[in-house]
Image 1 (cartoon, one colour):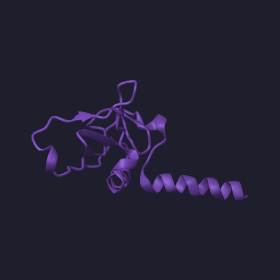
Image 2 (image 1 turned 30 degrees about the vertical axis):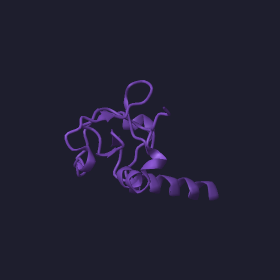
Image 3 (image 1 turned 180 degrees about the horizontal axis):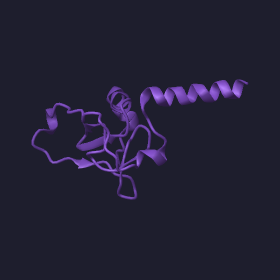
Length: 108
């Protein structure tokens, strides 16, 4: 019985934040969520490289889900010269609260 309650709790959390498991996040369907525009700030006029995983695909730095395209992302944030795209509505806020935790910065 406890396992069922825990399972429903986990499902409820994912449903509340709108995050899909990795397999579903690669869908080519575009959501109805608007793209969140961030102030340009220091990056104004700069061409930013999008963060991509080792396979060359866009990847949400918070959940690790692949994102089909920039248009399919639910938002983006710019951090230290890189643009990060997100898979679901809760990810931009999590990233913006602690970008150092999620940013994929290569060692020099």
